[in-house]
Length: 133
Image (cartoon, rainbow, N blue to C red; front, side):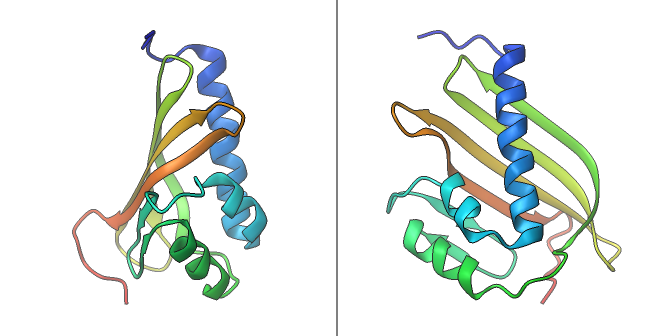
């Protein structure tokens, strides 16, 4: 198994998918958000005000979430690590809108044969652990 780190074209492919996901969060495009995550009961998404165990719970949270600009005011740092051509992690630090807090977002991506890149695990939290709600 080839686990060469950060093959440039793979990094750019994952970056494009991440940016598409981020725009879908702003637009509340549930179709794109759903297409980004692995449709599996094993998929997990931890967030600051919700946890999703399995694709169906993650989808239910997305549908219920109100539209709006979201919590990200601006990016601080984005790190993408790819291993070979089929595994990636994306980590983002961001300023939380209207708060003196820094947020963290992490995603684990896997390329599935015939299905493409999917997030299998995701997590969003604040750096200091303070709840926003």
